[in-house]
Image (cartoon, rainbow, N blue to C red; front, side, top):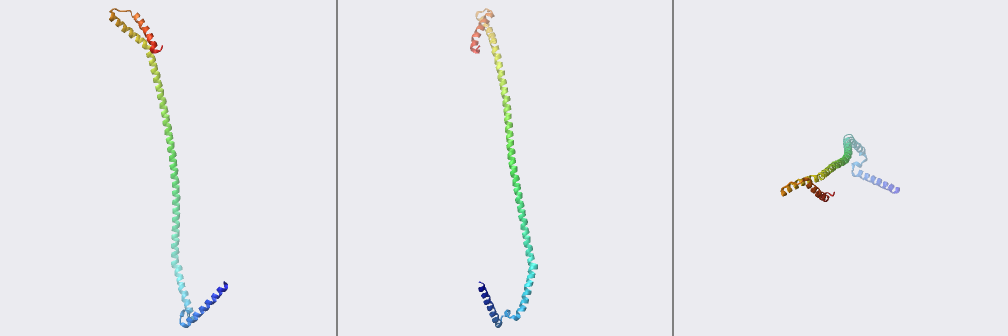
Length: 196
């Protein structure tokens, strides 16, 4: 491969020297050796000025513009990252607030439920006690009425019987005999009604 490159270099240098010779004889001034020094001077001067203009005027502006854009992009990236972190923090705070609110609502609901159940149980106990008191009172009144009822009934029966007999016969009968009959009847009927 090195031989191939070597032969190519020899071929191109021979071809260049042939073209330079033919150009010198044919009238191409840029290949004429006597104009080469002036061409090198102007080439160096032109590219030197072009280099100075590019390096001192144009390239610093382009470089400053690129740096400005780079710094702006970095600032935008930092701002976006900061906003992302802030939004994540706010999202976490929001989720914590929601979970805390749910726990608080559940606690309040449980407390209200327990309080309502206690109130219901307390009112039920009071109501049961009142009902029991009323039942006891009614039973006592019934007992008193049962105890006093035969005497009152006997008294009314004696008075009524006495008045009826007096109206039927026209004469007064001894209340003691009527009382004995009424007592006997009330004992017989009392066994039926009162279970005595």
